[in-house]
Image (tube, rainbow, N blue to C red; front, side, top):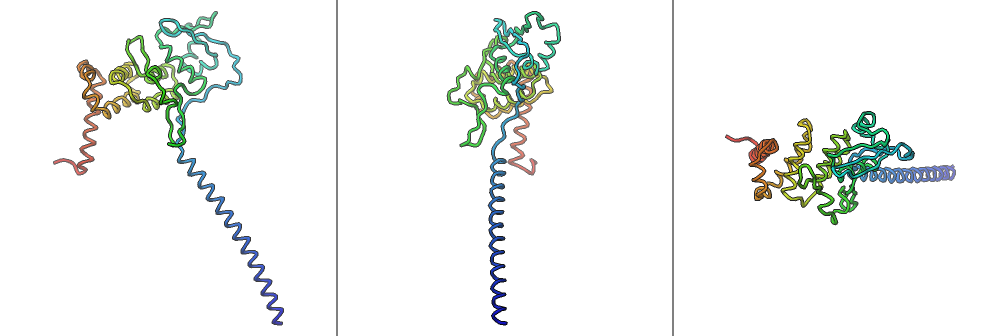
Length: 277
């Protein structure tokens, strides 16, 4: 009897040991899978998301009619598929209206800047424009491609009206507003925040252009320039261009005065949380 009980106990112990080993193996495997899944989720959340941009049209069937566009005072010619260009409500309305030369399918836009329109067209086809956004894996951040080799020609455009250098992204933003392309507006605004090495004259001229070519209800681009000038106030303080522009006055500098006052109030409240007096 004692031997039998011992045999029974041994069998029971082996059974429990085998069951415990299987359970432990499953637990370890489950823990590893959970840890791996958690790591993947954390990596995905830590990686900055790509800025929103409109999805290009379905390019699998580019058989729609070709529309010719004459851009700028010199009539520089561009060609685009009708189903691509009409993604913009502005051009969709033109193709249905009297401004399209029906026989040649030609649109004339003498007031537009060719370099700017080229970027708009690139965006409609590809969802971005040069210089494109590039994800830097080492820094885990989005930046403009070829930033080390960029020249003023890629960031600044000589506009014919007014005849002065303007930031290209500002002109693209205003063009996107005219063409009713909100995704392009967001992209152009984001890229402006990545630019550096722009002269005070170009910044102030671009700010005036932004005020003249955006509605008062659209404050994002205006706020960008106000914040930029305040952040760089030490540089602008030494700029003779800034003094000339301030003497000219205008809504830009009234808004700048209000923004500076708000900034000073914020600084005071940070230094004296309980208030003054």
